[in-house]
Length: 154
Image (cartoon, rainbow, N blue to C red; front, side, top):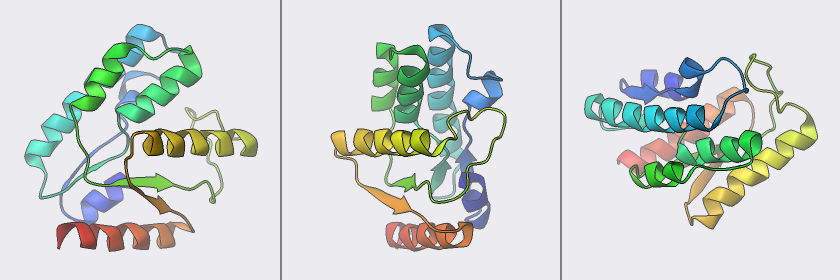
C-alpha cells in the first residue's frame, strides 16, 4: 500500500528493507541491527527526495516487535534508531482481509494474527502515538488513507 500511495501522490516510499536483506525469518541479533540501521538510512535518503509526503511501509517499532518475536530480545540500538525518525501519521492495518503467504510471513493463523495486531496496537498506545485504523476491503482501505492524507496536507 505504501508503494501504491506514493505512486498516487507522485512521491517516494520506503519499502520494508528487511526483505532486501534477509530471505527468511531465520536471523540473528546482528541481522536485526543491520535491518534497523538500513531501514533508518533509507528513510533519510527517501525523505530528501519526497514530494511533501513520504510513505513508509514499516518502522523501527515494527523491527523491535519482530526482534522480540523471533529473537526474544531487542538490541538497545533499535530504540535509539527509533528516536531518530518522527512520523506525522501512523496507519494500523486491521486483520480483516485474508492472510497471504508471501514466503516471509509465517504468522498467518487467525489467533497469531490477532495477537500480533494487539502487540502493534499496544506498542503505539504505550508510546502515545495516535494512529488511524485501516480496515475493510482494499478499496475501502485506500479510501481511508486518502481521506486521512487530505487532512494532513491541507
